[in-house]
Amino acid sequence: LVDLFARAREARSATTGDKVFLYGFVYFTTWCRNDCAFCYYRRSNPIERYRKSLEETKQLSMDLAKSGVHLIDLTMGEDPAFHKEGFQSVMELTRTIKAETGLPVMISPGYIPDEWIDGFAEAGADWYALYQETHNRELFARLRLDQSYDQRMHAKLHAKSKGMLIEEGLLAGVGETSADIADSLLAMGRIGAKQMRVMSFVPQEGIPMHESFAADRTLELKVIALLRILYPYALIPASLDVDGIAGLRDRLDAGANVVTSIIPPSSGLMGVAQSSMDVDEGGRTVAEASRIISDLGMEAGTAADYQAYLAELKAMK
Ligand code: SAM
Ligand code: MD0
Ligand code: SF4
Picture 1 (spheres, rainbow, N blue to C red):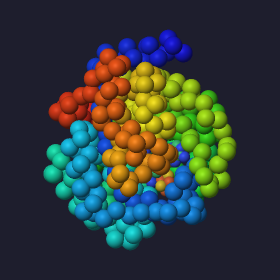
Picture 2: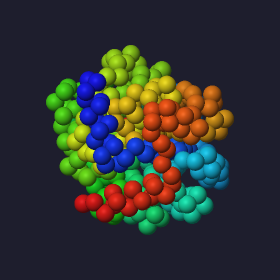
Picture 3: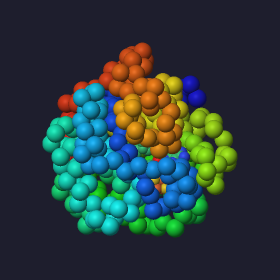
Picture 4: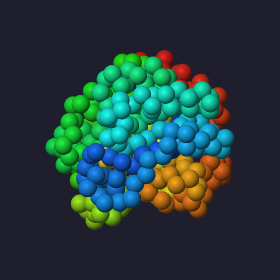
């Protein structure tokens, strides 16, 4: 294992160098029409929810930009209010945030139909993040209840055909086999994802998968390393949303080169897998992440480095 991680780090320094990029996470509405088995925000979980105003969402994004992140990830549950409205306001928001922060924007709205993807492409959204979680259809059906595997995959590919970069992701520890993992590793390259993620399943209060499956992170770390070796160019997240800031070092050591789920403290914003861990404590900040990055002998990139790298990724086939 030590050898695997060392090789992954070599692959990383040979291609992306030792620069790490930092993503601001803005989960602006936690309302969701879906009932994913693994998710705290599934509609049948009777939790407290919020929907931030567009103005506040813009403000929080600007604060994150000022703190030094390189991208804003606009994330939402599949909130019926926006589905009814047709997402016009979120497209507008994307445009505004890009203009005012000067940073690339990723959208994570869940599944949306082609015309809305076209709207986001026109609004200048750089990335569409949409994770299949697994490439085993049967397992997908057990995780993403009443959702179509093909529609979800189609949406991603449509976004790519419109010139957007796509992020694919898988969950570790949800009942998958090693063969399933191998399929996912290959699928990520095949569909042309330029950002690829794995997150360990974090059991949640009030969901059916409450106590299922182990909390061992070895698999997640192995997948990060394998992705790095298979796809040296890829942006691979070390998500603060699984083990908080304490989990950053191991994930970077395994070959990740992006820190995701940076959330401003006292903003009322939540994470997904870890809704509150380290947020108000100020652990999920650029300052904290940068400290760990330098401890490891790496450095946080600049916004210009990040944008230059995106241009390279966009130019790749
Ligand atoms: N609602 C949109 C969607 O599902 O595509 C965007 C946000 S969604 C909450 C983002 C991702 O968080 C999911 O695709 C899943 O990979 C991850 N996630 C959700 N709940 C999780 C959990 N309990 N443990 C680990 N990852 C989780
Ligand atoms: C993260 N919690 O970056 C976020 C989320 C959605 N694009 C990303 C899973 O870890
Ligand atoms: Fe909704 Fe996304 Fe959670 Fe599924 S993963 S319940 S779509 S917020």
